[in-house]
Every structure is written in structure tokens, then in C-alpha cells.
Amino acid sequence: MEGSPVSEGREGDDRMLRVTEASQFLSVSAKTLRKWTDQGIVHAARLPGRGDRRYPVSELRRVRREVMGLGE
Image 1 (cartoon, rainbow, N blue to C red):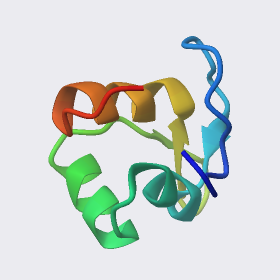
Image 2: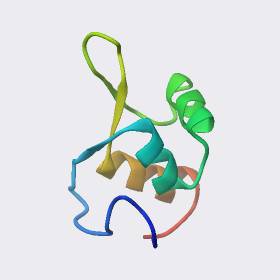
Image 3: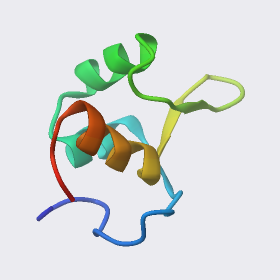
């Protein structure tokens, strides 16, 4: 994916992305990504304190394949 904050690489890559980075990776808005997370479509870790969301790259790749129907 050109311009992506994450290069296409290993399937087991579990780097964690912020909401903005993850939404760019999926080519959806941050609002849509938050909604999908609240609905249980996308799984995110919540950081202690403010509760910021972090998305593992492997989860975003799963969403691209299984939810959005996009190949790698």
C-alpha cells in the first residue's frame, strides 16, 4: 500500500498503530475505525490512563482480508 505508515511485511507483525495510522492503513476515516472497534469488528488494545486505542498490524491485515475483502 503506497504511502502507508506500515510496509507490507510479515503476517505475524504486531507493531501497534495509533488510530490515525490504522485508519490510513485501512483507507477509512478515524471515525469509522472507532465505530468498527466499538462494534467489535476490529480489535484494539486500550492504553491505561486516557484509554487511547492501539491497533496491531496483524489485526488490520485481518480486517482488510476478512471484512473489507481486500487481498494483501
